Image 1 (spheres, rainbow, N blue to C red):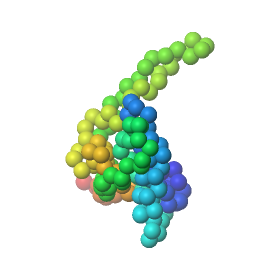
Image 2: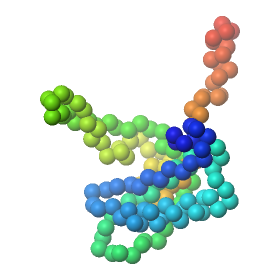
Image 3: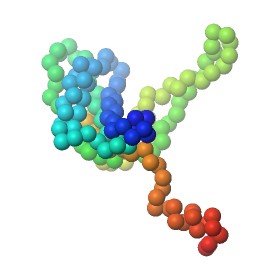
Length: 149
């Protein structure tokens, strides 16, 4: 998304991880296939970031690359994470807190969103843009600032 802030068309890829050893070779293969499909007619627009999430794929003794999972284009899950922190001490004795969550422990997950579809074993594709302006409320806030009711 940082590239999108600068107007550079961008693609972000994340892979779900579990407790076993992740098959990064599979993730790389799947990511390449998805990216090739997405950019065959051109790159994302300036200030746009395409977020790709790859489902869990762990070592199972096989060296074969599993087939590409189903893909879903879907919106981003907007529920916050359940934050977990561990209190620790640095080598100098200073206290600090270490993020201890696993990254996908959300307070809620709506059906059809990227997190829901990822948990169903799908590759998710979510077009993002960095402009977080609530355009639909600009006029309301402008009226309040000007003193209009």
